[in-house]
Every structure is written in C-alpha cells, then in structure tokens.
Image 1 (tube, rainbow, N blue to C red):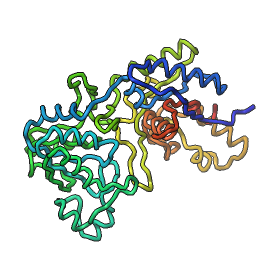
Image 2 (image 1 turned 60 degrees about the horizontal axis):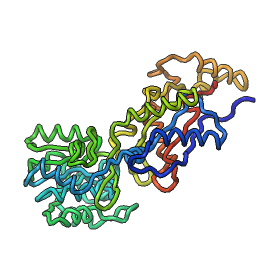
Image 3 (image 1 turned 90 degrees about the vertical axis):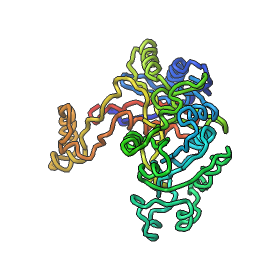
Image 4 (image 1 turned 90 degrees about the horizontal axis):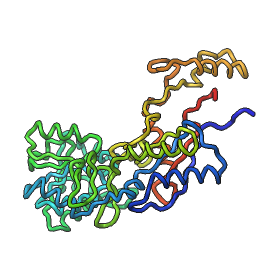
Length: 396
C-alpha cells in the first residue's frame, strides 16, 4: 500500500530529571520503550530532541542571587550601573535583576520602548503616534513616560513591569532611576559602567557603547561565565538563557552539550543499528501574531546537535511545479512528473524559481520550533520529542 503519512512528531513522556541523573541513558531508554509500546520502528534519519531544561537540571547548573551579586560586584565595584535593554519577564529576568541589584550601589534602568527585544510591550505603538513620540529619538524619564502613557499592565501577566522591576531593585536598598530610550548611547549620559541585557543584539550594543566612551561594558553572557565558588555557570552564555528556579535562584542554560548528543546517537546506533540525529533545544524561533512576542528568549535555539542536522532544507515548491512547470498535466501524469523533478533536483536550489516560497531557515531552528511547540512549557511531561519522516519528500 502506498504510504499516506509524512512527518510524524511524538512527544515522549520521560521521568522527572534531577541533578546527577544520566541524561543520555534516560533518553535512550525512553526512546526504546516508546518504540516498543507505541509500535513504531526506529529508522535512519529519525530525530530525537531534548529540551535544554532537563539537561541543565541533570547537570545541576544553578546559581543563586548571591552568586550573581558577587560577580556583578567584582566587575563594577561601587559604580552606578546602567542596566539596559532587559526583556520584560518574571521567568527570564526578574531573579537575574535581583542578583544584579544586590551587587550594585545604584542602578539606572534603561528600558526600550514601546516593546522589549522579544516583543513584550510597555505601551501600544499606536499611543506613540497619538502622543507624537518618536521612540528612535526621544528619551523619556519615568515621570514623562507616566504622564504620557500612565500605568500599563502586560496583557498576559497583568504586571506593570516598570513598577515591578523598580521594586525588585529597591528591595535591596539600591537607588533606581528609570529612563526610556532605544539608543544605547543614552545610558552614557548617566554612567560609563553598563550591563547590557539584550540577547540577540548584544554584540552591536557593546560595540556602540565601547566606541562612545563606555568604560566598564559587560553583557549578560559575561555574568557567571565562570563558576563563582562552586556555582553553576555557562562559559559561552553566562546568564543568557537562564530561567527562574526559585525565588532565590536561576537554572542556567546547559553547558557542554555536544558530548551528550553525540553519546545518545552512539548508544542508539549500538542498540538499533540506526543513525538517529539528536539535538538539545530551547525556545523555538517563532512569533505570536496576537501577543506580538517573539518566542526566542534563549541565545540560540539549539546549543548542540549531531552533524546530520547541519544546514538548511533544499526543497522545491509542489504548488509552483503544479501551476507552472506541469500545468498541463493531471492525475498520475502530474504525480509522476513532479516525482521525477524532485528526484533529479539540484543539490543547491538557492535562487531557483522552483524553490521560491520554501523556508530558508536552518534545520535546527525549524526542528527546534517544532519541538518547542510539541513539548510546550507547561505540564505535558514530554521533554523528549521523537520525529520521523522529517527528511522525506513526496517521492518517499
């Protein structure tokens, strides 16, 4: 019988992971058990993905507010610290901010507006037009912002992030001044010591600050990039990609993940004879059209993956072929013509009309988004995702 199913994605239920657990063994056992119970065969080019959270849990990669504070204090001393461009998130940044505040004497908090880097809005952009405010040129004080826009609570969390972040800082007896600007250079009018908290634009921000008189300039990936008296750390990303663990600690992005994915692939090959691709994934790279939030608050979608997931798709658009190349064909003739075209397509379709409208994104970003949407961020209990048929096409 002709195959009638293409890509299949399964969320696999696994055990609760704790510090010290053998994550490689748990992933392999979960995949093999799922294969047996659900009756699917493991094949070459299948993909198993693992959420970054459980990898970090197994590694015990945690840090406390005190760990963050000590690193901030060591880098900035008694300087007034400009904390600029943080995302608006209780889960992602609030605990980090508490640690930063505990290690500082005074903070100037500079927020981007109308939204943060990933799309959380402080104010509706239409209100800027109504009030005649240009977010690219206008610098606002907290008082000016309130006079123009009042108090606005985030539609999803019900939090006024200006009041919330300010209260977290003042909780430690630290003076806090809040300003609003989208120009990194603005903060240099207040202090030359800056901690830039943006994620994907951090390299540009640091370059601008250093070129315009910034003296002590760090980003979140510089905080806890080394262990502080036995704390967790991440050599590449520091505090980037961290999540709230408790009111006093964060779980950091997992470290040194490449040996983990390679080992899982190796063991699955030993046990099944099949080459399964493996990756660790964090946030998917997609945008919510209603809330306008870009999901990617992690520094990367995937911190590690096996070699077979390198690259981008090389696909043709079926509807283009049907409407153009083979518009005069129908039924089995059309199917045969399209199948032959796919089987004989070029190894690199960049610029070809037949590939127009396909997705020129990295495989790891696409698969990470698929995995993140499948596992969710709540109580599904499926930290492992098993994907079959992803690399198939119409001819398989």
